[in-house]
Image 1: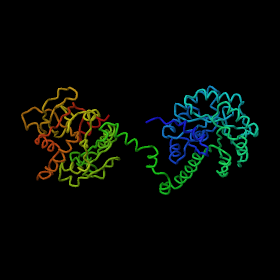
Image 2: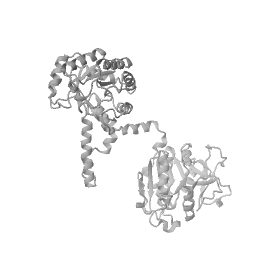
Image 3: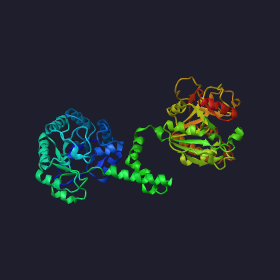
Image 4: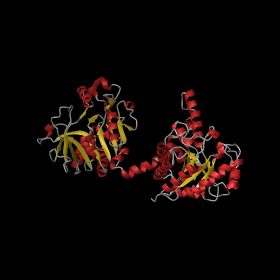
Length: 540
């Protein structure tokens, strides 16, 4: 996409031969609002930016802080920004550096005023403020023009003679000197509530160069008067910051007094509107384009069982909600999934389903959990199956690298098998895995297939390859296999007693390849009181 020449847009505004308007903004959000409203340009007000920093408009905010804020404003908008550059933040050398930094951030122009640094706002004892020498100020203009690399970058010279009480003749003399020094426009400023001296200046100026005004004090003047006077650009200079202050003071008072949000929620911008102004939708589209497939994964978490072996500890909650080191097993699992970019999780609940209150999950409930096993629970989440998903037990604890490496392993269905047969942390009756190759400890062993799963190693004379830990990755073809298998198995009389190992064994019988990702320990599930002690040590 070709870069927009914002400086050229500003120059066209100054030379459009009709009255144009720009509105104040002071940060990225207000700049976006100004653009969305339809304005053709933005006035980056020194007063407003100082106010949003909470400091006075007396150069208390450094020029680097101002430039940093301008970068945010420029990044989110395509219309030109004219900076209220005060006095140029110093002498001619400061002016040169300012212009360079503004052009780097695609700022279209800067307006500098002929007062001395540090400045004070023109409406605070303006008549007591000393003005810069004409020659010195002309030097700043020339230095700025000589420094710009974009021919369209605009420097507007702001004449403060009327504010300081020096009269019309001095204002005209200064304006002409600044025009001859290379200023691209003249801003004539006044603090009177009537436009008389502004209109007189415009008449005497006779359109020698673009003329800019800031009618903050003479705001009641009909706009048509500015058109007839040949004004080129009107700056509404500080009304966005003033409007926001009034709104924030009003709403904060209401919240404080009512101790509730009920009365104001419908009277403020929605969170979704903020997201829109922040271009959240564009980020979602970019994530779809640039992030790896795992960001679109859905996790199916089985957490329907009580865990009867844990006795009174699971009286009021399912096993997955047991607290280990201050966080429930399920919360630890969901956090680990999110850390690796898996943000969509469906938790299949059953026993004490209401106790599962993890934010950011979708919950499905197996209401027949007491009479069914794992496969019936999995079927409860069929609507949430996706072409890339993780199926996992909700009581697992594991080191993060196990899941990370699983996501890097190829296969339509990949199951995690712990080859450490002497793992002291195992309890209960782990599912014994028999695989096409034993683990040779090489990273990411390829083409190792699961041959069967069994709850007992005595069912065959073949040496076990390890234990399935209850975690598998399913891609598009694998999802289709599981969909079909669930339909077929659901017709069997023993469906309610079937487990995930039964599903995997069924797929193997049908000739579907189940790939293996080997690990060596660093996981455990919680089946007993002893496991809780081990889990506490595991999470330290």
